[in-house]
Figure 1 (cartoon, one colour):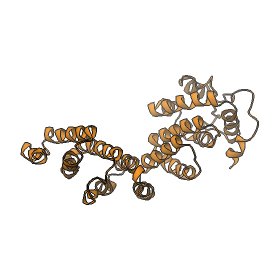
Figure 2: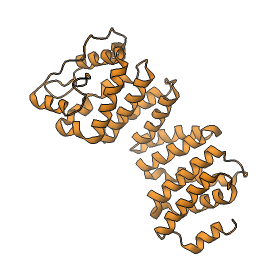
Figure 3: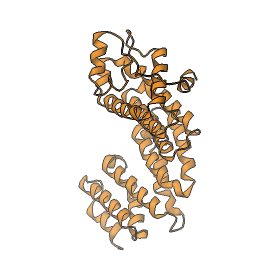
Figure 4: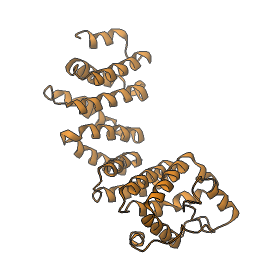
Length: 291
């Protein structure tokens, strides 16, 4: 709450001042734009102090355009491992600053801050849980569609254990019950299984078991999202789950032939399975023979 209150204070005239040892200065200078866009806020211990975090929050509030540029660079730097290599504590140290940026009144700042938060979660499993919690906190408060989607993707990307995966699954299942959002739910479900493979039966249920519904249940957009998910599974998880994708491929090719993009993706997924010897040509012909 203190960081949120800091956003309401008048912004400082200049960017926060860099402090710390020469090693910490080198760590910050290694990030292009970090020092000159107000990003290097390291104390002598290598952590971002509460006072400096408040100063940076105020700076972000008063300089949204520069803050967007800084957050973009921060995401790239964390993802590349540059900052963590020079000063590992700094990655966790900037977490309060990024969280403060996520409550900025500027939607562009919130969007880039969400990207930065996900970069942190990818950098360290230890940070994944607080990142997941903050995404959950912001989900009900966010009104911008782009930021809302980024937060939903954040739930799937940060779900690395049973508890967080179950919470993410609950949110995704609610989306899947809304027909216009079924495609979004499929994308999120695939992201979830990439981090927590035990959730694959839930993706399979969406991809295959909906075939029991009446034909035409899949809208054009949802069918395309379904074919995209099938293609990704065949490409990245074909040896494990490829055979289970065959009914979905058959349904797309046989019952949704008017959706050319979806059919093309489904056939591309089938080719992946053939190339990896998961499915033989005879089985493929059974799928395509009626067409």
